[in-house]
Image 1 (cartoon, rainbow, N blue to C red):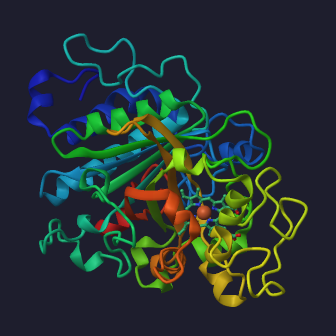
Image 2: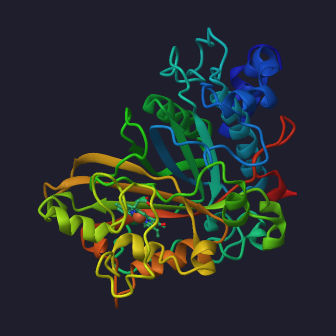
Length: 424
Ligand SMILES: C=CC1=C(C)c2cc3[nH]c(cc4nc(cc5[nH]c(cc1n2)c(C)c5CCC(=O)O)C(CCC(=O)O)=C4C)c(C)c3C=C
Ligand SMILES: [Fe+2]
């Protein structure tokens, strides 16, 4: 191909294939020398100052990356049944993701006036805001309605089911599940949108958007960010540099039974509506009892400072920290089992227009990563939603969407692509 792609060739290809070629063509020649320089970028990223984060690595970015202020999580459904086209989509998205995270345009300017722009352009002049793009696959990619769509059925991780309906869930089909999910995070919401929009555009004819959910954190705050109930959220999350924790509780290993997924992890997304108006009528002390922490400091009920550890053993009846408080049910702190269950949370607040009956349509876009969906997330979730002693917070929340996804291993070099081992 020359510097331009002729119209007949363009129309003769799938959208994804075309995008792949376009990337390989326009961007490849002009910018490839700038892509794939992970070592120096990783060093820069480590001190937290770099504006761009590395795409290449054993694990995908966006899991143990310090949280950026904004997120846009988008689920796609594949609309074709051809394995090669699916593979091509992953190749195209790999090149695009590397380019977007580098902060490079998806097309050289000026673009060919005869065609729609390859890069939609709203990011021009903006910093990437530490953009990360994280790709994960749902169980329906392997098998849908009994059909082995892409010859991948035998590759399905045993634990990767569709997200079950838990007690009190009110899942809406158009907000739930999906064949592929992409999490875009950045300190600029326009950058997240631009990334998802252009990935969707390149996938036209091969995959379409099923749902999309934005989220954000308070921007200029030191320390742990707050959720919309007004509490610090993330206090007892593991430290992001705790390598032993990530190895034991987050990253999937070959021995877990799905060798192609080594270096990946499982992602849980739950779109949790919070009944803001009802919550706001609860007395201050009730709110603290429900969460199991002090509202302003974030300290446990029996502590003084945010990072003090509660002592549930000396409060067996729940006089100080209620037995059905959120933190006590989430983490009863009863030894080995509780440690093995621990997950890495990475959620965002969402604030949208009013719902159909005039209530605030707001809540938590709960995201967590774990190595085993059943023994970690589900084990915690089942305690929180146990009808015999549910989490008190359940009276103020309704989960309307989300899903279970397997986060693909990282792409180690420019010669590789997302999900490559899945197809080999
Ligand atoms: C199944 C997992 C969880 C869901 C779903 C969930 C929803 C949810 N959480 C809050 C607010 C807080 N959660 C906090 C702690 C916390 N939450 C979970 C799990 C789920 N939360 C865990 C494992 C923990 C850690 C418990 C511990 O180890 O002590 C806190 C306290 C501060 C903190 O440690 O982060 C708050 C506050 C909301 C509002 C919510 C749904 C809307
Ligand atoms: Fe929680």
